[in-house]
Figure 1: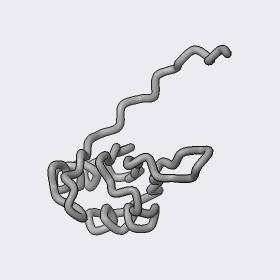
Figure 2: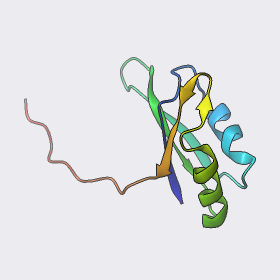
Figure 3: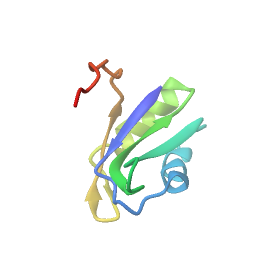
Figure 4: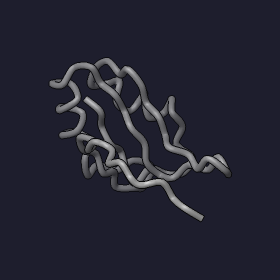
Length: 88
């Protein structure tokens, strides 16, 4: 299951995100999304957990929890919608 994690501090790393979820089970990947030009975190990320039950437990435990003084938003990620190409 792919999990969306929002309202992260900009200093959170991929490894810290992985560690946060690993206490609930196996984490296949953890990625903090960064701006492609500046490399600055955008304050959200995605975690992939192969076991849906463990992912559900993580979502339930971490949603609305406090992490580094910020209230996290954690839920199942929605599929990415296709957007038309931008024209300049």
